[in-house]
Image (cartoon, rainbow, N blue to C red):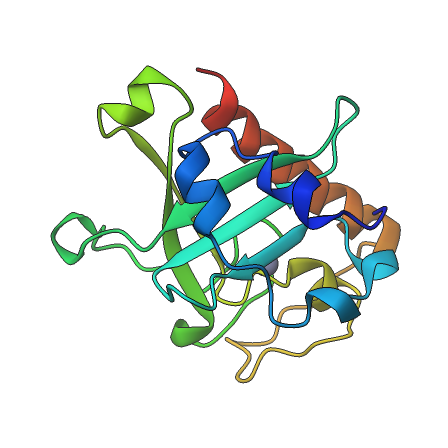
Length: 167
Ligand SMILES: [Zn+2]
């Protein structure tokens, strides 16, 4: 993706308040990100470890989604060790269930969309083999090419983003 400025990132969020977007913390390595290997930017908020953010490049400009670790009482009993965006398999702690408030009024009423993702939200780096899961959950062979896996990742991400943003 094309490198983004802090201003572009903060103004891209569709499912949090302007105040929240102004207060969120950028990745610690923001000045040093491997943009050419990122299909989207995802990170855990360094100032709030129960929050994470995604910024996805789209034709109309970057689109930001804010996510949080759901409160324990609402966590589903079914636990996945597979990231639903990039399909990387991890040992259980490598995948986190996050919930994104829906954009607009439905989000303000508490409606969210949940997704299991790589806990560090570094899906593009896993798909490219630049980062390895600490513990791989089983071994599962991929027959797809890198391009096919990147396309699949983008499709999964788009489907999620569309559900959140379609208010
Ligand atoms: Zn992933």
